[in-house]
Length: 337
Image (cartoon, rainbow, N blue to C red; front, side, top):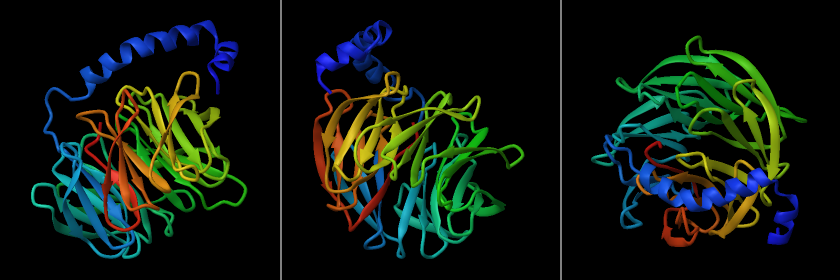
């Protein structure tokens, strides 16, 4: 979109917001990038589906410092808020591996439901919620004991999962329906589904904003991202970014959003207020999951087709590094924001 087109279609409020954001955002990103009192895990963990390994990237040097053999098809991963444990969903073996972040050793293997496709750690670090796609269930793992404490029915074929910042709500993306997909909203106190939200078919990922007011759901089938108002559990808007809309991540302050466009080999940077593309950044082939580093705000993108990770600067949007990984990297996880 040209600058002339933007001037014609952007309201005075949005123009004011844009000027303020350009002036203030770099300072805000610097101020909030590093929490004042938290242990920092400076590594990113990449699941390589093609060779059954996890690549450990030192984000200070943007280099792989360890490769952990886990076997099977490691599909999704999550780091605990304290940075001490990494949980890896092994889709073909119906298990979750627990990795000690200090030693990079697998310390436990937890049996869960069929084809665990996604997992997330509760904000207080006490539980891991695992979406078992082929079982249409969710397993709850106690972080202290690494044992399953509950298994609950959820929507049909849950492929993605997210948690609200206060830990009170879980969101699963349920894709097993022909004409429409759903987001199931789960109350973590009762562990009951309290709402189902229709979204376009081939929904692929979900991310909840840092303040919990909005959730964003990408749909590969429609090349759009749906915006959910979490207070009403309704879709209030959707926006296009590029071809093959696959995964979405939010920054620490919720501005901007990052969407991987798998069929364009690019990441779109989105203004969540105007819901328009700010810029596009070329990545490796078939970019998948992306994450924002809490210490620097840098964006790390797992490129499934080129066996590497792209590192993007949060302010200049320049590519800072391309890091070789194992085969077919699909997911990348860092310590939560």
